[in-house]
Image 1 (spheres, rainbow, N blue to C red):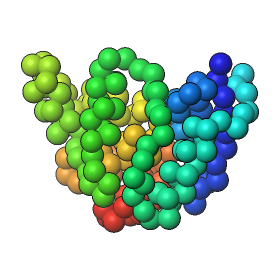
Image 2 (tube, helix red, strand yellow):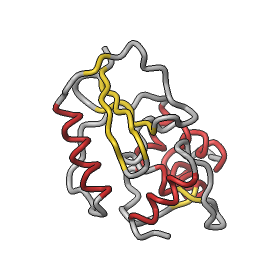
Image 3 (cartoon, one colour):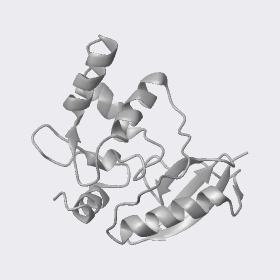
Image 4 (cartoon, rainbow, N blue to C red):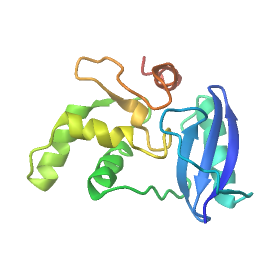
Length: 161
């Protein structure tokens, strides 16, 4: 069963999704890849309270020192990219190419920055799995499901831009 809760951020509404134990999704209202959650049930879950406390700290300009339970669903490749995203430090950035090189070292297989970009773009738990910290090789801001204005805000909040 899928459960949802709503959070109001400085960037607008955010819908949180959970399997009952862990966070499975965090989506800006109206983002391009917003999933159909019409069958989900609204419920007050401990993981939602933890995620909202994390978001409160984050949007207050602080680096949270805890992480709610996360359970993203994706392919093995996507999961490996999302695991790397979780290692990008608060206030830091990396590139799609740098992630591809890290994966090449682990797997021994050649990876393209474009394939990494596809996986980054399918991250279902934005902000907490910080896909906004991935930028173009030339330092430019590139795609973000919530919109480039939100990506720029989040990087600015972390003191990156």
